[in-house]
Length: 130
Image 1: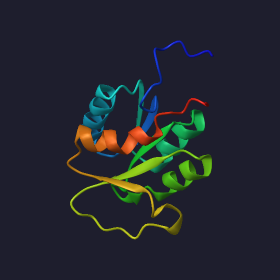
Image 2: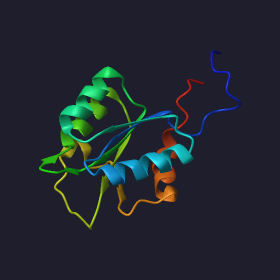
Image 3: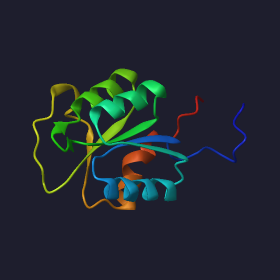
């Protein structure tokens, strides 16, 4: 196979963060890199996220439900259409009415921890066809 890295990679290698708070996005990026993710891309709006997905489909998405004045469900729907796993990130015990198509997605709550992120992304790390 063309993959010469030792052993299977346990985490997705291209993760898209959709988050409008710059500091939180940086924090998430640091945590993802510490878990071994090599490519972390960040979008702070629905339009930017959709553009990044069109550019190159990520292996996993971390999607903040509330982006300033807009909800990010459109991004989640797009990832679902493409078969890309994702979790929503949300804070402050936010309760949103999730659209039917995405309401069974996982949720990671602020403040984020490396453990919670690891638990969210690990099941999706084995992307190599067997």
